[in-house]
Image 1 (cartoon, helix red, strand yellow):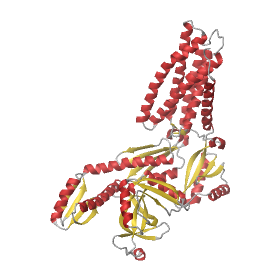
Image 2: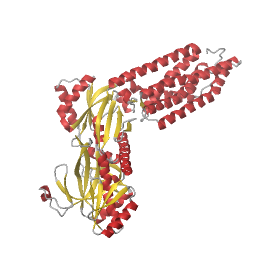
Image 3: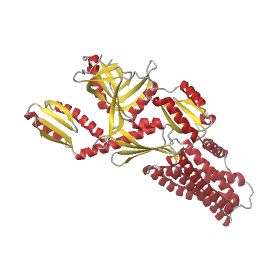
Image 4: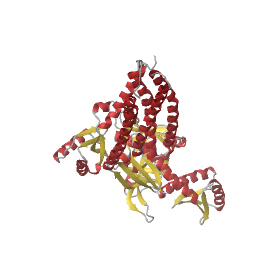
Length: 614
């Protein structure tokens, strides 16, 4: 008999609707205003600190909903934004600079729903609020690093060519090469000009060659510094778990970073602003550390310190630079202590292998390097950065090392995790500094949400009324499917980790509401045509759905392809629109073709029907 739905299709529809409704449910619970406390580099957040925070809030008579401790963070849930501001200021004063205190919004999802993986939709910066950073790249450091790399390269290349030199050293933004006689200088000049066409090689007095980057090469270095920093910042943002971030170039040396709905603004600021890398150097065992502390540092050596203030005398020559690190993960060693596992590229593996082979049984230090802004500017108006070097580990080389090895001796698992994150994301080509920070408040986002919800509601109601009047009983079926479609969109958006709802995305939902009903209009008009041609109600329903399917499929496929192109080439708001459009197309086809067919078959299928209310 016509219009009979198999049992498996009923089960499928019920399962899909139940799952999407379940994961759409967290969106109705809203969010709490919250203050989040996370650890600094030298501190750790503990359960004891959470208890202290709760006691301090009670003593200050600050009203709060709950104090939660999880994942080495403390979250204080508060009733409103005013209390949130008071709490942040109170905790800031109490905890000082040892901890990071930030205002956030925390989902108020029930524990049972959260245990099933239920989370609300991620909202974009324009809806939820978030942080906007404008970051400036220190171009002088980028050029200085490039010059430093050329110094080491010149030394190696001249040795390979057996061209004896007296010294190779940096001189500002140039490299000076001093020779012992004029013949070698002439040969070296000919060789370097051929091998380095992007540099100007000029002869100077006192048997010296000066190598300077050409203007084109300097422009390439600056452009590469910005592009590479953008790539690395994107990697860092992704590892922070921020959905749909915006990272793009602005001007010649600035980068815009937008983090919608960021849960830990202080931590994000620390990670994004840090310029960190490692280098590995041999410990100078011939020099006297006490003499070095008193100012008598041996030639070719440098005095650095551990975090606890212990001095370490190192050789200036760097055995391996952090730029050769391609991966870094944190774990624990056989004794349960934190460690960072490092993988090197092929060139770095060769360097480490050669160095460790020559220094088996000798100590090697791991030096952590950070560039921190001083909030001062030089004569050129650029920010001045201070280089901070710290010995984080000294270990004896037991055997020849290769492309993979580990760093031990770290103070905590949190330090190992943060260090691995920075190294895995990459060392920034040049230091960066946040020169502008704007917070988009949740009140503006709330207003946008309200206006967007009004648009969706008005559009939905208008379509529901039209379908009810024009198609009567079948209009009721279409309306149920239409409401179901909105629930499916919200549920799918909540389930997909990378999906973010933006204001243009809400426009995409309004559009898919119209597209969803469009499919039903095609089906219902087909049924009407079949009835006018004299077919029975059951035959009209059957042929109406079958004949309209190809038209609906073609129209939706072409629109879906357009959405894919928008997602591939678009950024920010365009991507937000395309995501909801593509999800809406899939859910609308499911509800318009499958869900309504199941409902129609359930109501009219297999029965003696003389007339259809359509």
